[in-house]
Image (tube, rainbow over all chains, first blue to last red; front, side, top):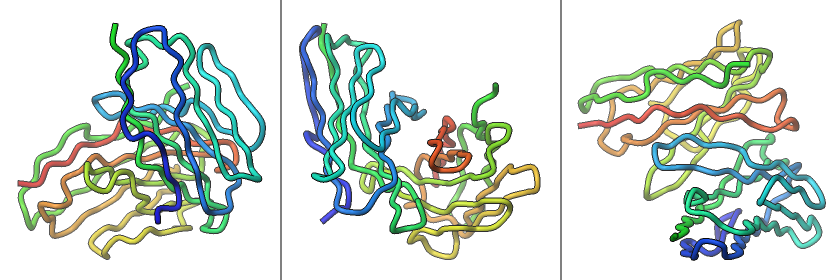
Amino acid sequence: KNEVEQSPQNLTAQEGEFITINCSYSVGISALHWLQQHPGGGIVSLFMLSSGKKKHGRLIATINIQEKHSSLHITASHPRDSAVYICAVINSAAGNKLTFGGGTRVLVKP
Amino acid sequence: KAGVTQTPRYLIKTRGQQVTLSCSPISGHRSVSWYQQTPGQGLQFLFEYFSETQRNKGNFPGRFSGRQFSNSRSEMNVSTLELGDSALYLCASSFPASYGYTFGSGTRLTVV
Protein backbone atom coordinates (compact mmCIF):
# COMPACT_ATOMS: atom_id res chain seq x y z
CA LYS A 1 0.00 0.00 0.00
CA ASN A 2 1.33 3.42 -0.94
CA GLU A 3 2.13 5.78 1.91
CA VAL A 4 0.20 8.59 0.18
CA GLU A 5 -3.02 7.83 -1.67
CA GLN A 6 -4.97 10.28 -3.79
CA SER A 7 -8.45 10.07 -5.23
CA PRO A 8 -9.76 10.30 -7.81
CA GLN A 9 -7.01 9.56 -10.32
CA ASN A 10 -8.85 11.45 -13.04
CA LEU A 11 -11.59 14.02 -12.87
CA THR A 12 -13.52 15.84 -15.57
CA ALA A 13 -15.67 18.82 -14.67
CA GLN A 14 -17.68 21.47 -16.46
CA GLU A 15 -16.56 25.05 -16.07
CA GLY A 16 -18.02 26.51 -12.90
CA GLU A 17 -18.30 23.23 -11.00
CA PHE A 18 -16.89 22.63 -7.53
CA ILE A 19 -14.01 20.14 -7.49
CA THR A 20 -12.65 18.13 -4.57
CA ILE A 21 -9.46 16.06 -4.55
CA ASN A 22 -8.66 13.86 -1.58
CA CYS A 23 -5.36 12.73 -0.07
CA SER A 24 -4.83 10.14 2.66
CA TYR A 25 -1.47 9.25 4.16
CA SER A 26 -0.21 6.59 6.52
CA VAL A 27 3.05 8.10 7.77
CA GLY A 28 3.87 10.74 10.33
CA ILE A 29 4.24 14.12 8.72
CA SER A 30 5.47 17.56 9.62
CA ALA A 31 3.49 19.19 6.81
CA LEU A 32 1.69 18.49 3.55
CA HIS A 33 2.01 20.18 0.16
CA TRP A 34 -0.52 20.48 -2.59
CA LEU A 35 1.30 20.82 -5.89
CA GLN A 36 0.09 21.73 -9.37
CA GLN A 37 1.76 20.47 -12.52
CA HIS A 38 0.83 21.74 -15.97
CA PRO A 39 1.82 20.02 -19.24
CA GLY A 40 5.48 20.83 -19.79
CA GLY A 41 6.36 19.61 -16.33
CA GLY A 42 6.98 22.54 -14.02
CA ILE A 43 5.59 22.09 -10.52
CA VAL A 44 4.15 24.88 -8.42
CA SER A 45 3.47 24.55 -4.72
CA LEU A 46 -0.09 25.76 -4.09
CA PHE A 47 -0.21 25.25 -0.35
CA MET A 48 1.81 23.94 2.54
CA LEU A 49 -0.35 22.87 5.48
CA SER A 50 0.37 21.50 8.92
CA SER A 51 -3.08 22.10 10.38
CA GLY A 52 -6.50 23.57 9.65
CA LYS A 53 -7.39 25.29 6.42
CA LYS A 54 -5.84 27.66 3.90
CA LYS A 55 -7.47 29.63 1.10
CA HIS A 56 -5.95 31.31 -1.92
CA GLY A 57 -8.34 32.73 -4.47
CA ARG A 58 -10.62 29.92 -5.63
CA LEU A 59 -8.49 27.23 -4.01
CA ILE A 60 -9.06 25.88 -0.51
CA ALA A 61 -6.97 23.23 1.23
CA THR A 62 -7.83 21.51 4.48
CA ILE A 63 -6.03 18.97 6.60
CA ASN A 64 -7.15 16.72 9.46
CA ILE A 65 -4.02 15.51 11.23
CA GLN A 66 -5.88 13.02 13.44
CA GLU A 67 -7.55 11.36 10.45
CA LYS A 68 -4.42 11.70 8.25
CA HIS A 69 -6.45 13.23 5.47
CA SER A 70 -6.32 16.37 3.36
CA SER A 71 -8.56 17.81 0.68
CA LEU A 72 -8.04 20.35 -2.07
CA HIS A 73 -11.13 22.18 -3.28
CA ILE A 74 -11.44 24.27 -6.42
CA THR A 75 -14.47 26.53 -6.44
CA ALA A 76 -15.96 27.88 -9.69
CA SER A 77 -13.55 25.77 -11.75
CA HIS A 78 -12.13 27.19 -14.97
CA PRO A 79 -10.42 25.53 -17.95
CA ARG A 80 -7.11 27.05 -16.84
CA ASP A 81 -7.37 24.88 -13.70
CA SER A 82 -6.79 21.85 -15.93
CA ALA A 83 -3.60 20.27 -14.59
CA VAL A 84 -2.31 17.42 -12.47
CA TYR A 85 -2.65 18.02 -8.74
CA ILE A 86 -0.25 16.18 -6.49
CA CYS A 87 -0.35 15.70 -2.74
CA ALA A 88 3.09 15.45 -1.13
CA VAL A 89 3.86 14.91 2.53
CA ILE A 90 6.98 15.92 4.40
CA ASN A 91 7.66 12.53 5.94
CA SER A 92 8.96 13.17 9.46
CA ALA A 93 9.80 9.49 9.93
CA ALA A 94 12.09 9.55 6.89
CA GLY A 95 14.27 12.57 7.45
CA ASN A 96 11.64 15.03 6.23
CA LYS A 97 11.83 13.82 2.65
CA LEU A 98 8.88 14.45 0.34
CA THR A 99 6.66 11.45 -0.38
CA PHE A 100 4.17 11.88 -3.20
CA GLY A 101 0.71 10.72 -4.07
CA GLY A 102 0.03 9.46 -7.56
CA GLY A 103 -1.61 12.69 -8.68
CA THR A 104 -5.09 13.63 -9.88
CA ARG A 105 -5.49 14.67 -13.50
CA VAL A 106 -8.14 17.38 -13.69
CA LEU A 107 -9.78 18.46 -16.93
CA VAL A 108 -12.19 21.38 -16.83
CA LYS A 109 -14.30 21.72 -19.97
CA PRO A 110 -15.67 25.06 -21.10
CA LYS B 1 13.93 36.88 -6.50
CA ALA B 2 15.03 34.28 -9.02
CA GLY B 3 13.44 30.85 -8.79
CA VAL B 4 15.04 27.44 -8.91
CA THR B 5 16.96 27.06 -12.17
CA GLN B 6 17.56 23.71 -13.79
CA THR B 7 19.78 23.16 -16.80
CA PRO B 8 19.53 21.89 -19.40
CA ARG B 9 15.77 21.77 -20.03
CA TYR B 10 15.99 18.92 -22.52
CA LEU B 11 18.61 16.28 -23.14
CA ILE B 12 18.92 13.27 -25.44
CA LYS B 13 21.54 10.65 -24.64
CA THR B 14 22.29 7.16 -25.83
CA ARG B 15 22.40 4.05 -23.69
CA GLY B 16 25.64 3.60 -21.82
CA GLN B 17 26.49 7.30 -21.73
CA GLN B 18 26.52 9.40 -18.61
CA VAL B 19 24.74 12.66 -17.93
CA THR B 20 25.08 15.55 -15.48
CA LEU B 21 22.15 17.78 -14.58
CA SER B 22 22.42 21.07 -12.72
CA CYS B 23 20.18 22.82 -10.20
CA SER B 24 20.66 26.33 -8.82
CA PRO B 25 18.48 26.94 -5.75
CA ILE B 26 16.80 30.11 -4.64
CA SER B 27 19.33 32.44 -3.08
CA GLY B 28 19.65 31.63 0.62
CA HIS B 29 18.21 28.15 0.34
CA ARG B 30 20.69 25.57 1.58
CA SER B 31 18.79 22.37 0.87
CA VAL B 32 18.41 20.88 -2.60
CA SER B 33 16.50 17.69 -3.31
CA TRP B 34 16.14 15.73 -6.53
CA TYR B 35 13.19 13.75 -7.90
CA GLN B 36 12.51 11.50 -10.85
CA GLN B 37 9.11 11.52 -12.54
CA THR B 38 8.04 8.79 -14.94
CA PRO B 39 4.57 7.90 -16.23
CA GLY B 40 4.72 4.50 -14.56
CA GLN B 41 6.22 5.35 -11.16
CA GLY B 42 5.13 8.93 -10.67
CA LEU B 43 7.34 11.22 -8.61
CA GLN B 44 10.07 9.53 -6.63
CA PHE B 45 12.66 10.99 -4.27
CA LEU B 46 16.28 10.57 -5.37
CA PHE B 47 18.36 12.39 -2.74
CA GLU B 48 18.70 15.54 -0.70
CA TYR B 49 21.72 17.68 0.02
CA PHE B 50 22.17 20.22 2.78
CA SER B 51 25.35 22.23 3.27
CA GLU B 52 27.26 20.01 0.81
CA THR B 53 26.29 16.80 2.64
CA GLN B 54 23.88 14.16 1.43
CA ARG B 55 21.22 14.04 4.11
CA ASN B 56 18.78 11.55 2.65
CA LYS B 57 18.69 9.07 -0.20
CA GLY B 58 15.92 7.27 -2.03
CA ASN B 59 15.87 3.74 -3.42
CA PHE B 60 17.84 4.20 -6.60
CA PRO B 61 20.88 2.29 -7.83
CA GLY B 62 24.39 3.61 -7.32
CA ARG B 63 24.44 4.84 -10.93
CA PHE B 64 22.55 7.84 -9.60
CA SER B 65 24.73 10.21 -7.62
CA GLY B 66 24.82 13.84 -6.70
CA ARG B 67 26.76 16.55 -5.01
CA GLN B 68 26.31 20.04 -3.69
CA PHE B 69 28.76 22.89 -3.89
CA SER B 70 29.56 25.57 -1.33
CA ASN B 71 27.22 28.01 -3.12
CA SER B 72 24.38 25.45 -2.67
CA ARG B 73 24.19 24.66 -6.40
CA SER B 74 23.74 20.96 -6.92
CA GLU B 75 24.44 18.49 -9.67
CA MET B 76 23.17 15.00 -10.20
CA ASN B 77 24.91 12.44 -12.34
CA VAL B 78 23.59 9.28 -13.92
CA SER B 79 26.19 6.88 -15.28
CA THR B 80 25.72 4.01 -17.74
CA LEU B 81 22.34 5.29 -18.87
CA GLU B 82 19.51 2.83 -19.46
CA LEU B 83 16.34 3.32 -21.48
CA GLY B 84 14.36 3.29 -18.22
CA ASP B 85 16.20 6.38 -17.02
CA SER B 86 14.16 8.44 -19.48
CA ALA B 87 12.21 10.76 -17.22
CA LEU B 88 11.61 14.28 -16.04
CA TYR B 89 14.16 15.12 -13.35
CA LEU B 90 13.06 17.83 -10.94
CA CYS B 91 14.93 19.58 -8.21
CA ALA B 92 13.53 21.59 -5.35
CA SER B 93 15.14 23.94 -2.87
CA SER B 94 14.09 24.71 0.66
CA PHE B 95 15.23 26.65 3.72
CA PRO B 96 14.70 24.36 5.51
CA ALA B 97 11.90 21.86 4.70
CA SER B 98 9.55 23.35 7.26
CA TYR B 99 9.38 26.50 5.16
CA GLY B 100 8.22 24.56 2.11
CA TYR B 101 9.74 23.57 -1.19
CA THR B 102 10.16 25.49 -4.45
CA PHE B 103 10.52 23.40 -7.58
CA GLY B 104 12.45 24.00 -10.76
CA SER B 105 11.01 23.43 -14.23
CA GLY B 106 12.83 20.15 -14.62
CA THR B 107 15.17 18.52 -17.10
CA ARG B 108 13.55 16.11 -19.51
CA LEU B 109 16.02 13.32 -20.25
CA THR B 110 15.44 10.95 -23.13
CA VAL B 111 17.68 7.89 -23.45
CA VAL B 112 17.72 6.27 -26.88
